[in-house]
Image 1 (cartoon, rainbow, N blue to C red):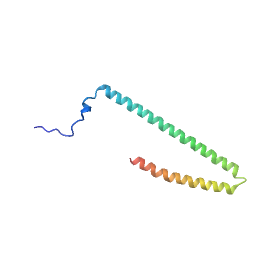
Image 2 (cartoon, one colour):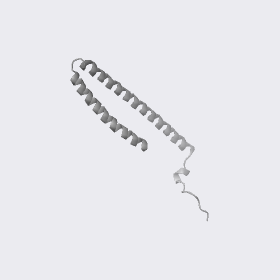
Image 3 (tube, rainbow, N blue to C red):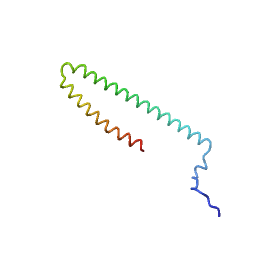
Image 4 (cartoon, rainbow, N blue to C red):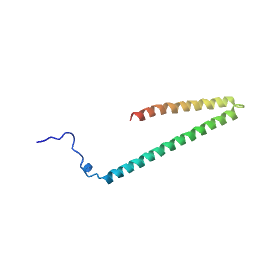
Length: 100
């Protein structure tokens, strides 16, 4: 009695044809394209938000610095505290996403 090494192949694999492989590769390519577009859109959105945030910060500094310095420092403290909290949460999340 001869023994085969390794697990037995799945019955569906034996039924795969060239058409199935071509379809699988086509769907895989479309998925890669969609993933790339999604990454580009996310980066553009992040850039827009950064520009808007810096513009708002510049607006605050230009219009509040001459007259309301104490209000400006309070607003900047809140922004720095919020930004630090966001950064502290973003770093560990990104690290755990890389480990998966």
